[in-house]
Structures are given as C-alpha cells and as structure tokens.
Image (cartoon, rainbow, N blue to C red; front, side, top):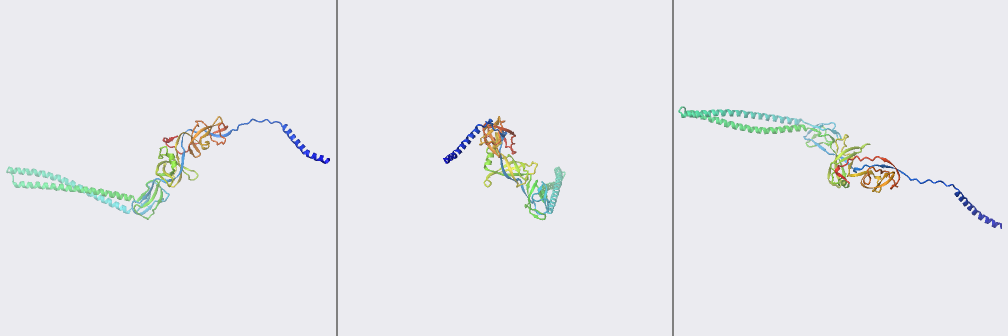
Length: 437
C-alpha cells in the first residue's frame, strides 16, 4: 500500500511543480508595469544636391594620337665639293634658327668662276661701249658728208648753168659731177657701216645678258656653298662631316619645322559620324591636346585642318590632322609624342549636364522640394564620362539629387546640402551652327 502511494506521489509532484511554475510566470508577466511607447519617427536622408545650369552643352570625344611634323625638309647640297666646315651643334635633336649656317663647302673654284664671269662681262660691256662710240662717230661723219654732198650738188648746178651761158667748160662740169658721185658713195658706205655697227651692238647686248646671267649663276653657286637653315627647326638627322666630298643633290640634313606641328589621330566610323552627322565639318574645330609627360600634363590648343581622303581599314577609321597653335607660351611637343586629343561633340541646346549617378533607370531624376523628393522625367542625350547631358522636366532653380539612394522615391524625406555645379569640360564648344536637340 505504501509503495503504491509513493509511486503516485512521485508521478504527481513534477506536474504540480510545472503548473506552479507556469502560474508564477503568468503572475510575473501580469504584474509587469506597462512601458509608455514612443510614437514612430520618419527617417531623413542626408543628401547632396546641385542646381544645374540649363543651356547649350556638348559631350567630349576623347581619342589618342601622335604628334607629327607638318613641315619636314631634306636639305640637299646645291653644289658639289669638299665640306670645309660643319656647325658645332649640328646633331640630331638640336635646334637651329632661321638663317643659321649649317655647313660650308670649299668655295675656291666657285670664287674663280665668279671672277671669270665678271671679267667676261666687263670685257663685253667695254666692247659695247666702243661699238656705240663708233656708231656715234660715223653718224657725225655721215652728217658732214651729206652737207658736203649738198654743196657739191649746188656747185654742179652752177657749172651746168655756166656751160649753158657758154661761160664754162664741159670738163669742169664732169669734175663737179665726179665730186657729187664720190660724196654719194661715201654716204652709202657710212650708212652700211652704221647698220653693221648697230647689228653688232644688238649682238653684243645679247652677249652681255648671257654674261650677266652667268655672273648671277656664279654668285648663286658661290652662295650655295654655305647651307643655311630655311626656318626655325629641330635636326632630325645629318650625314655630314668635315673633309667629306658631297655631291650635288645629296641629302645633307633633315629638319622638322618647330612652328608647324600637327597632331595625327584616328576617329572610328561611329565617332566620326557623331561629330559630323549634323551636316557640319570638322575643319576649323578647336580641340584640346594633352601631353602627359612627368607629373603635370601639358595642355595645348589646336585646330582641325584636314581630314583624310578615305577611311583606313588598317586603322579602323579616318585620319584627322590638327595644327597646334604656335602662339602658345609653352614649347610645342616634339614629333613622335603620344598625346590625348579631346574634341567637342554635338551641341545640345536647352539641356543640362549632371552626374550620371543622378539618373535613375535612364529616364528620370529626383529633385528636392520642401525637403522631399519629387520624380522628374528626363531623356539622356549623351554620355560624357561620369556625366550625362539630359533634357526633360527639370526647371531652372530645381535642386537635383546627386547622392545615390536605393530607396529613392516620391515623398522621401531628405536633408540636402547644395553643391556648386561642375564646370563645363575645358574642350571648346563647336561652332553655333551645329546646335541640335
């Protein structure tokens, strides 16, 4: 009997403990003092905004190119001979100024040729002077003989009159006729001699012209013994040294003009089409050239001068050449330099430039009005690096959201910080005639 009661007590006791624990727990929960709940608060996001400027904006096309010489000249020897002198600084990479003597060729034979040409000219001019003097002398003699002929003819007429009056003889008339005939013969001879002398003067004048040309040619040959730099240039290469025999038309020095430097670059079919699809032309377009050398990039201005005649399949596009502005204070890059080229693209009127992160789903942005976001529809016109050019419902004075928020939507509460708009890229805007929407 006792064992049965013990078993029953051991079975009921855990149940009683469990029931008691549950009841005690419920009493504790029921007796807990109620806490006063705070009303829910709305989260405000701290964001940055910008007030974009509405106007004409242009994306920038960035490509890479190479600096090339616009005027490379091979200076050739214009006369042959032994090189007697070479400019000390005439080495590849050196610069020379216009008019600098580059080399001198032995001038002895050319000086002798000039002396001989001048002597021949002086002799011919002296002979011309003598011929003209002879013509002048014979012209005076001709005038005197004509006077004597006139006197002889009048004397003959008087003799014939005396014979008619029977006061003279036939013999005197014959003698006077002979004198008249001699005078006429002398005149004819002098006229022929003068004609011959005048023909000789013409021949001598022609000979003098030839001799004068020979003198000029000799002077030029003598001057050509000194090879001079035709313009300010950098020496590309030289093949001269003292004592070397150089032949006429041999290349002596190759020069690149310093103030005529082009940038050659390639535009793809797509890039070229984007730049000219408005019916415009690249010629005359101002561009920016960046030469990254050392820690600080050097920036230059240039102008597109010409476009290749055909699309190069090897380069995958069309060649474009731009002339660097020579008036820039900094030294122009040397040919062969690898540079970045930035060209202004199409101009979009009545547009705004904003950060690409401000555009959601490429069709809308958010503006802040009374500390809350409002959605505005836009259309992306062009991508330009980390910025985009858009047109749409953004009005002047609107503050466009810059900070990217995943929860962005109409009515979202924000605390804004207005930042100044980013400046337009340094690349010059194309001419106003290309403005499009």
